[in-house]
Image 1 (cartoon, one colour):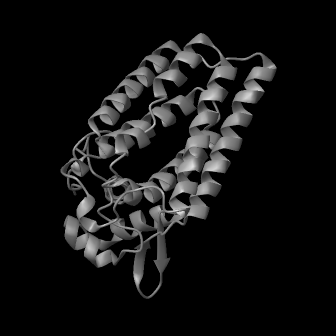
Image 2 (tube, helix red, strand yellow):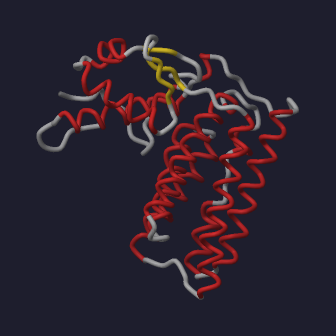
Image 3 (cartoon, one colour):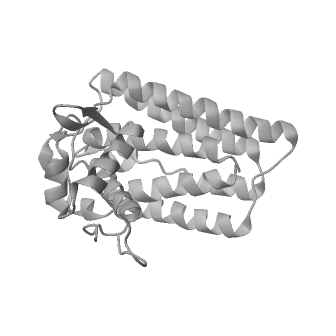
Length: 253
């Protein structure tokens, strides 16, 4: 995360929050793992104040739980929580695109669509390679940039937070899963194609099928039918990459 211009406390706070979010998404900070402000400050070689602020930000995003006496802990998300978040995503996304269809509107924007297409291509490439960390990064960027087309930052921001938490839940289950390549969704390009055509109903259908697949996976987890490993050794070397597919660097003061 190279700095551009002077590094203020707020900049450092954001850098630390981004780095820790990547650690959680990569599975190096695992659900239930506890740590203190001092431990994180020592790890990154920074003062305690921006670290504390960053941790409070992540707790506000429901990625961490805080304890006045014990510090912070990575939130543990149950299968039921995951299912509820996917259902919320499904209802909101379907409502947004149904409203567009009823109003005769469409989602357009050539320059934005080109960028989204690139994210879709990169996500597909990562899925074929079985590179979960890179896939997560491009998947998050894909949906966040697609959300810009909806022109409602409240909805797109809320959906982004839900997707982050869904990935926090999913990563430990996907590590070491022999079916990982098939678990990683490959419908990003189908969404872009439908959006480019202005076919709102097709967008609804593709996204609806995606959410149905996630719910079926959750049901399989409850029944013990889905493989995967949640051992601490399951994080791969590619986990050194951040949400954008870029290598993580220590925050700079």
